Amino acid sequence: MKLLLASLVFLLTSYAQSFGWEESPKISELFKNAGVNGTFVLYDVTARKYVGHNQARSGLRFVPASTFKIPNTLIGLSVGAVESVDEVLPYKGPPQPYILAWSKDMGLREAMRLSNVPIFQELARRIGLDRMQENVVRMDYGNKEIGTSVDSFWLSGPLKISAVEQAFFLAKLAQGTLPFSPASQKSVREIALLEQGSNWKLYGKTGWQNAPGQGVGWWVGWVDKDGHIYAFALNIDVQKEGDAGKRLALGKASLKVLGITP
Image 1 (cartoon, rainbow, N blue to C red):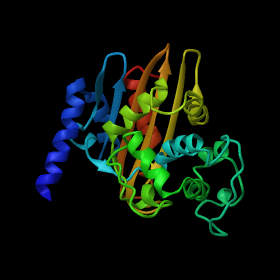
Image 2: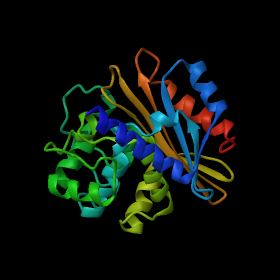
Image 3: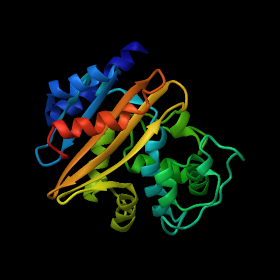
Image 4: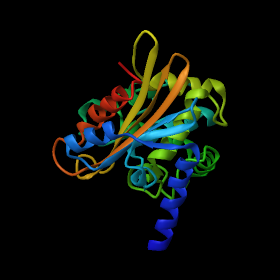
């Protein structure tokens, strides 16, 4: 098992090296000051290189948690599980969920903003196990393993993906080059938009495996700046109170020190 894991890490880090990897001392300093263990990867599509912090960890696969809402939406639209990101899905979660704002019927646009787990679980059930597996393979997402539970595989496994793989996948989505319809990819990009300035747009999604307990926290996305795509992925170990809140702060600071965002 250890040999298999070592081989996998080597394969994924070699994958990054094949495009070129630059370790950023500035980002490493940000992580050190934040007191968290993790990685940040930025994939510059034009330069075809990666820059970031902790290359060894960048190739390790973790459960994607709510970052899978991006591919889940794309698959749902592609197979017709929903007609649009504004089609209302019924809430079928617990009466008092982890986040109270979840407990109502809503479309994927609102559900993405609220990171509404029960709504996306309903979407996954509509897609079905066979179509979900087929499309996870089609998009070459992580280890491509979804097991037998269609509404929990991205929360507790067996699906896992590395930061390098996340960034490469999102770069394709940003460019509209995934093997899915241009209209479906455009809709997903639209609801993933977080912020924008005069010459840039920031897209992204957070994730927290085992929330609100200890686990792995994610922030993934991309920046479209002057027509250039910079896809990124951050993951950290959430070990204590306050760590989860560092995901966006660290990610945004990393983008800033690299000169990607103001």
